[in-house]
Length: 411
Image (cartoon, rainbow, N blue to C red; front, top):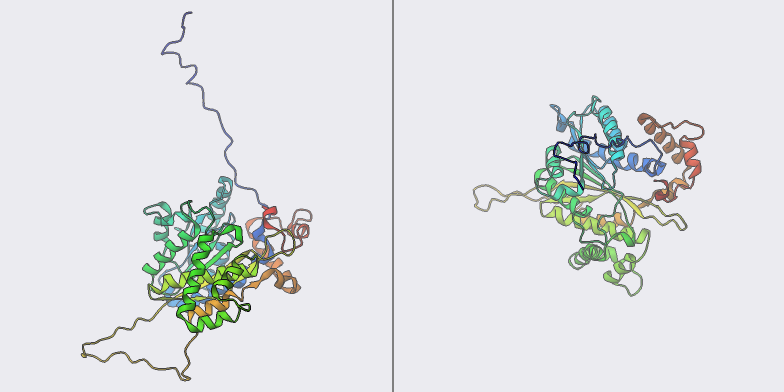
């Protein structure tokens, strides 16, 4: 057989490459984080405490163009950033945000973020160098990674908002870069680089199958250590024991439950962990009020999503002169000779006082309706057809009018 091909035959390689349809921005569609209960978290927790941290820092902290520095894991519409930008505008200060992609973000979702980011960075209150980094927040712990570099360029931060749809420490412990590892890296960076108060907001799912037994054991272990070393903490915790229980039995029992018990144990452990990290850098951690809600489909609708808030404050350093050249600082007692509540006891109380938003909104129709109006206004800014009779916000809520319907079915 004669081979008629030659080196000059380019009929195959000269053909144009096959064309592929370019990705388009993800279409607008109502999602779980558009529910009134999420608006409650944004407004009553996030903005409430952001306002408080700005007041604590003082307006002088933002003179000469120094912005509020904000780290976030924004959704495709950057709703939290929009709310913070509006708040900053009302205070005549500027916002510099650094966002990171969720690990589950698709290309279509990222393109939608690009569109929204363009509109945001052209607002007067937003610093033009603000950006959503195309990297996972889990990568901040990797030296010289894009995520680590961008974190350092954007920070240190006044507010860090880790609003995650994934567990903090999953059962697969061989996976590198868990969310809890990222939080440790971020916390270490903040404690090393900043000597002013700052705020950590943390939202994450909590249920027995979303946290490894070794991680839960490590969290509970800190509580046990605190019980042994702090009689006030031990006494406060023991008030919650069943007959015949000690601290280990109590934590073990709640760790095997779903809902409020597990959330309280987890929240206490996380608070104790953060307190332990912060104390090494001469910071104290104040656990603020937390909230929970349910993503389950059927009764009893136990809460399995928690939204926590922690205020980090530097401890005043006391420098002693033992040479006798100058007088040492004198410690003065308070007028009523009482000691302030410790960060550990406060964390314990707050962990068992987490409020279920689903129940709160079921019992407060006026509040629920006000949150519906707020949600509509926010979504309308992004371009959602909230007033459409068939496909609008009211129709969507009516379809899923049980406010504690499983969020997974709506994604």
